[in-house]
Length: 163
Image 1: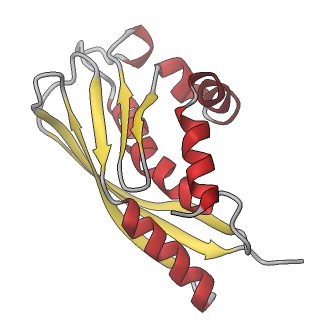
Image 2 (image 1 turned 30 degrees about the vertical axis):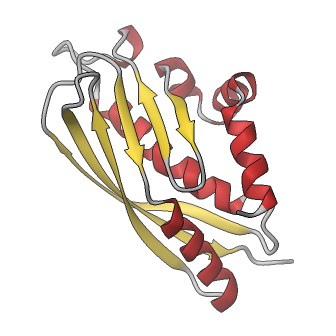
Image 3 (image 1 turned 180 degrees about the horizontal axis):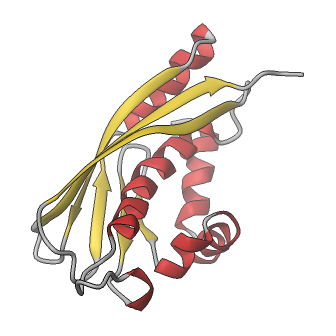
C-alpha cells in the first residue's frame, strides 16, 4: 500500500477530521448523518441513519440519502488512491444504477469491497495518460443483515492537465 493511501485512510478514520471534511465538502452528507464506519485499501463501510433530515414521506430513508451513503462507500476508496498522486488524477461519477429491495427504516450500512479496482484504474490512467472507468458495487443492508438496496457506480479517472 502506498504511504499516501495509508495516510488518507488514517485521516478518514479520525472522527473530527472526517466530520470537518463532510461539513466543508459534503454538507448534505454531514447533516444527513452519513459516516464512514470501516475503511482500508480494499473495503469501505458507510452508513446513513433514518432520522428527520434523511426521511421521506413514507417513513423510510429518502433514496437520495441512500445514494449518498452508497457513493461515499465507493468514493472514499477512490479518493484514497488519488491522495497526493503525482501526476494528479481527477475523478468523477459518470453513471449510477440502483435497485431497492426493502424499506430503509433504520441505519443502513453500505459496503464496497472494490478498492483494488480503483487502484488498478488509477495506475492505468497514469501509465497510459488515457481516461479509465471502473464500475463498482455498493450493497446496503439493515441491522438485520437484509439487503435494502444495491448500487452500481461508475467512476471515471483522468490525469489532470499540467499547466
